[in-house]
Amino acid sequence: MTTIELFKASLSQAAPPETLDLALRALWWAGKGDWDRAHDCVQQAEGNPRCDHVHAFLHRQEGDLGNARYWYGRAGQPVSTESLQAEWKAIVLTLLETPSAASRATTL
Image (cartoon, rainbow, N blue to C red):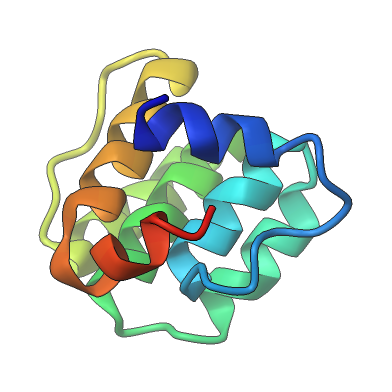
């Protein structure tokens, strides 16, 4: 099973794996449909590019495109034109592949 498959499989649990950083926890909650919890996670680490990127996604998901553009800019990312589902998956993959998440991914 790939890491993204493990991440998606973990969505059946009641809480995110403890080993995930705040950005991945936010995407986990977003994957469960809990926007408020996802937003709470990213707000805890504003200024962290990983969280700022997820923050942008969340405001795009919410339909607040002006706020989303602001957070994409803070994250140094282009404004996404992908479907929300495709963007969610792309961000998860990117964050799981980064060194700070690589060691955590094995424990999903």
